[in-house]
Amino acid sequence: MGATDEGEQVTVRLAGETAELVRSAAESLGATLEDFAVEAMRRYAADTLADRRLFGATDEAWRELTALLGGPAPDEAPRLHELLEDGPDEEGR
Image 1 (cartoon, rainbow, N blue to C red):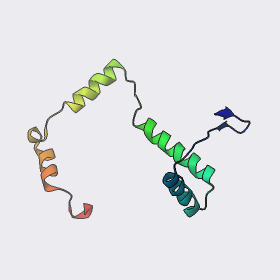
Image 2 (image 1 turned 60 degrees about the horizontal axis):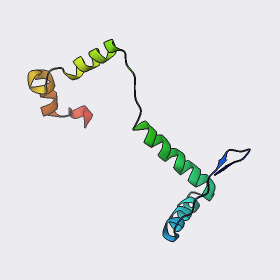
Image 3 (image 1 turned 180 degrees about the vertical axis):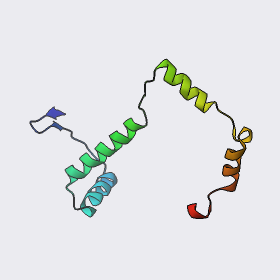
Image 4 (image 1 turned 45 degrees about the vertical axis):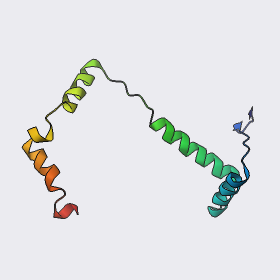
């Protein structure tokens, strides 16, 4: 990989079937192979990082969250139990 004025250049070798698949997908969208590859990599990278984010919380916020998560189970909360058993109302279907 080498840097250019426009950004970082990435060179990739693709095996026959993979190359054809990627090329066909790009053509189906009317995109250049480069634009298609960059967008695919960008989306995959964003999805990968979104699944691995860490969120910080103060000790007090953490205690509050764990208290909420440790709340009553559905069998201990009659109204919640009803909602879970009944399913969506007519308007929600």
